Image (cartoon, rainbow, N blue to C red; front, side, top):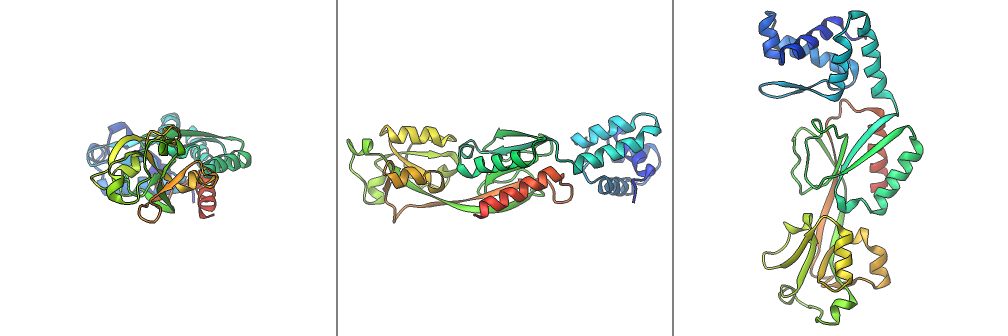
Length: 287
């Protein structure tokens, strides 16, 4: 089935008038009809064109590109339809991913980047650091990795659980030169605690928090220099724990579990390059 010129025309009217209701009133059409036909057009093209809100509409990146072409003589309309469809199916262009800064140096994410860039050399990866949930559509971000404890910006976004990571308390030999290793939670409350932003909301009120950071490398360096007891995810520091560089503190008493999730705007309109990244992330996290 091909995209209908009538549907394309209704899309063009909606953009020109700045909203579905305004376009319907100006041309004596039913609002529900315009909305339904634009949804059908998006289905045919395989991508979202409009971001709908209560009072207005906003063009997505594909919507702006499509309108740019159809706002020309109608002989260019078929070219616009083919261009958008091909763009959705192509393994090229830019794939933008938002991740917590703390996760960037993990072996799992580095393997994801390595394997994806090797398999899809024509796709440019744009990695941005965000610890909060963002409006993926408006910021033109394809995927976001977030702890499950963070509220997702849009409840209609897809959020899939990947794995649960345990965090424990660790200190260094340098710290023990001037401090006694705590054996109870009551004793722990007297020690300075270093932790990531995601763990800060999960701590008992009496914890003596001295540093909150998104950078686990910074937390590790301060722990190594004896500045405090750190809460660190086991999956990121297995080698340092095994070597004895990080010494467990209250291993049988204290533990925080965080589930990482993958967030993306919709199940309906997923470009092939994005779908490939989703499948790769699922595969590697499952291991």
